[in-house]
Length: 370
Image (cartoon, rainbow, N blue to C red; front, side):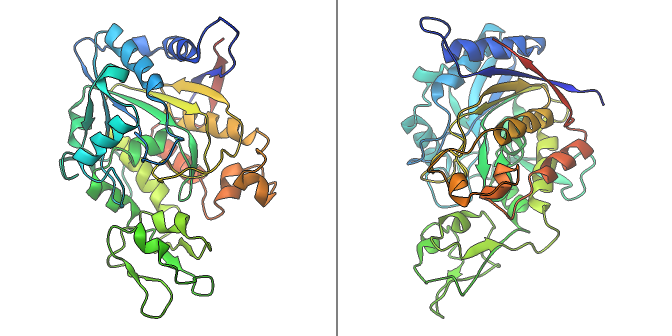
């Protein structure tokens, strides 16, 4: 497979020159978004609306740039995401839309409506065959996403405690899964507790939507019959006492996520945009965000989600860790910032499996847009 084209523009601007929004508009035009036939087509723009308390999610101003371009090309855009498994403000459509509005994603700021793709309770799903699926035969995808004619991924590229990083593949695969779809992806990577480290503080129980923790021994014990493997307890534990426990081969979550992404993108025109800024060590699903681990890098766009993720990962790993971040505190030099932040992860797995599924290539040509 020949190299994919990935387009890039930095966050640098000149006084009284182009704004960052102008640069994003130029980027997606140069990257070829106009090659897609949007005329009269419903266009799903998949984005993460952020959890209240988290300030690392993308500003709605960036979404409006994409919305405006789709409208200019004759499309009918809407912003979308699917409901979550865990305790928070996005576990049903009413709270999810309210969260989107609180975080600035209103029709007045973005120019289009918000539709929660898997419906009121997260069970409005389409069962979509996975091409060449090894672990998932029929993915459970939010119905509104599958009903759309065109798909655009607009993601905040950041670290992730279970997959190393969250980029285009995660935004598509995990993000478009219904609640049952997310459970299917997580179910073989449930966390366990290191009793020597656990202090019985019960903080993990506060973020568990399924009452999976038992403290009868004074220490947390996770009931895997109740646990859905969302990983929230892992990242919130103040003593790092909770870690991933793979009941199957390591990297199964990454592979299932790639297969879900393949189901979403099968036979559907798509385009992918990643903003590498506020690169927090963990997911935007948290009700907080830690300090960025590296400086802001820039904006990337491509028709190939695999090449896009590879380019973003390479760009982050070329950066010097920021002082006062978790990355600088660990003082490691593995040339892989994501592994240094979350040592149990291997983000290469999701990209390798995506290539195997025919989602794209890890080989890319980086084209800079001024």
